[in-house]
Image (cartoon, rainbow, N blue to C red):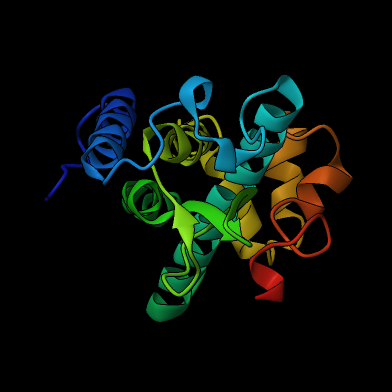
Length: 192
């Protein structure tokens, strides 16, 4: 799909969010929503603290996916990241993350850790992918474009803390953002 850059930014962001939700709706639904979640979820997504951790983890995986894709494209093209490059890559990344991420399963139980690793058992469903799709949509809403360019050109070492705590206040602290969805914060992809 070709998207003209002359379209208003707000329209493109809205379109990306709609597409991400459509993709999420088209995926096989294992769990339809947190209120009717099966017993195997053990409270994942059922209380405010679990939903807060899910939002933080979703932000972190979206930040990492966006950063890796923008950095990869910057390296492929050579030179520094530009605003145009970042916007183009971010929109494609958000469409992808809504399709690919699910919650990791461990010992037949759903965890609060998101993964796109096809070799790891994952719970998938609309309520699960909505966390990642919405986090990604917020991160590319136009307000953060310049910050993305600075992060990519500056090495991105603090990308999680900057985007998920300082700029968006999704995670409860910079330390929570730094350690979210990883083996340092809880069992996650890093230890698989």
